[in-house]
Amino acid sequence: MQLSNRLQQFLETHQAKFAVSSHPTAFTAREVASVEHLPAREVAKVVVVFGDGKFHMIVIPATRLVDFQEVRHTLELSQARLATEDELARLFPDCELGAMPPIGALYGLPVYLDNSLLDEDMIAFNAGTHRTVIHMKTADYRALVQPVMVSLAREAALRHDW
Image 1 (spheres, rainbow, N blue to C red):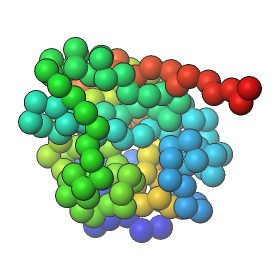
Image 2: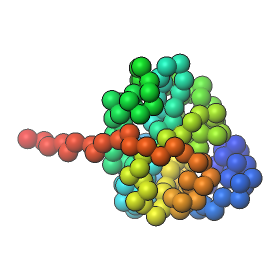
Image 3: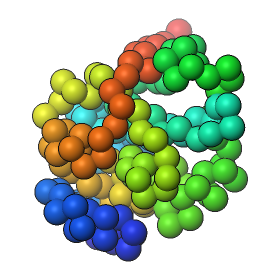
Image 4: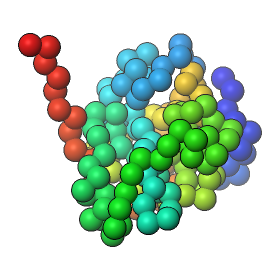
């Protein structure tokens, strides 16, 4: 179970309490929940937004989507968009694309945690790869990362194959 050296050092330096698990490759947070046998609402996904010249790390449950209207309003941005794959590769050079951990201090990014994750005792998130996950108490994650608590997500619409 390989963690990036940067993440491992950060967790050890801060004496974080966590567990690591590995699983078959899973690219989406919902896939991670499935292969880890976890409720999707416990699995955090990172969405990086670029707005007004800065990047912002938004952490939401796998069951939700970022509401860009709320992002612009809450973060007081005149414009906001998803970071591109090239931007993500530059911001997170030690991570597989899309598998960055929600720890902004490692990358110089502010972190905004969706309020809905406060309802969960545990949180799970990618550890820099699509095969490794960190599990920790949500309270411990909040103490470690000190995110801004916000409401920036909405429920994903159900899809019907009618």
